[in-house]
Length: 208
Length: 208
DNA sequence: CGCGTAGTTGATTGGATTCAACACGTGTGG
DNA sequence: CCACACGTGTTGAATCCAATCAACTACGCG
Image 1: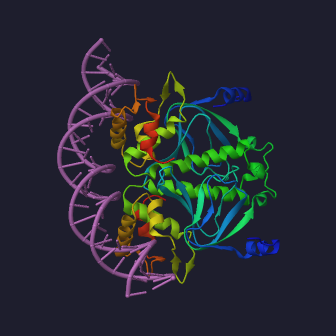
Image 2: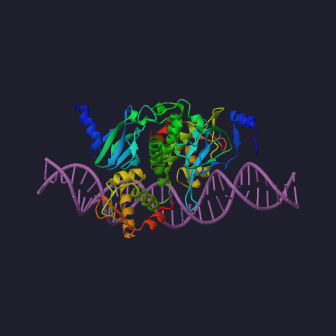
Image 3: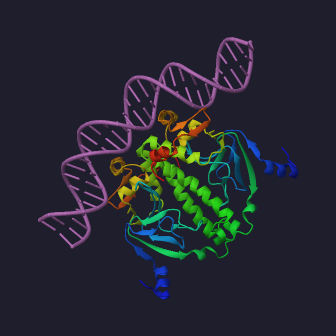
């Protein structure tokens, strides 16, 4: 539907809503604008020829995705939960960012953030044992999720976690239960998370 | 030892040799120059607090690593095999590369290449079953390794492959043998690789 | 020739996958 | 308001696959 520029500007300010499962952009599309997550969680996904799906990364409030390093998007992005995001025209990348200015400018930090999101997945599934993987995952997302009343908003479906960690939803469920029984985390609701014992969590997670 | 500028210039032209295991740069160091692989294979590694090591990515001839998106290196890099590389001062990034010129310039392609190397690991270990993972790995490296006499140079130690694929060296060995027995690959020597049946290899690898 | 490292192979054990059934919440229609 | 279906999440039980430990081989180097 048609939107006047004024409404677009307002939406950019207040944010555009998206329902879970909604597509933000598709791999191969010309990348005309960036996306910044305001609320909720977005996911980068990869579809194989056989239709298998892999969740490659999650993006949290404050993260930027869809950076135009190439003319076309290099992965597809969808809303993992209900979310609010903003679009930024690509040219907003430009102001005052000549390259080796690439050091610590906003844009280079956004690029680095995006790259780090993908690196992190490798580091997390690189661990042995699913307790360690899930612990590392919880430890990771806990640092990026918004908190309300001592509790983290944790709107990521189990299936997405499973795909991200290269396991089955059953294993995710069991392992989360295990962490609950160990009193390391608590989940007052399906989409709420409390880290009770950060140091033990980090210890089980092992790595960095 | 001290090097005159002339020798440095020459080395940049002809390439600097490094033995397997040699460190190229260390995570946290100020990143003063980039590295371009000429021959051999480099690896990005991550060391955890407990001393566990993970190979996060491989870099092949033509790849550039150590891009200065931040002031300091974001991972450590080592020679996975004997190799030849060149150093490029960071300011070589500069010429004519203002940012959204980031689209398809040499530098942005290098950044994208580096990011892709890390994404690829996630996609490969995201598969289920070690036959699929190893097949995907072989399929991946085969596209990047130099060929001599119909045969690919494959100088990557088994331990590195194991760490990259989040498995044990034993499993790598067994799975490679399996691929050999299926007539999909051949390995005339430990460090040589022939892909006999690319289509079946891709089929077993599953995804893209 | 002995030593050390990297690679290979075998046998056992443990842990993850799989399949099936069940629980729960939501939305729809009677 | 209840009945029902559907999607998502959870639990249980059997199977199978990969990790582990150990022994053995191959190779390079002093």
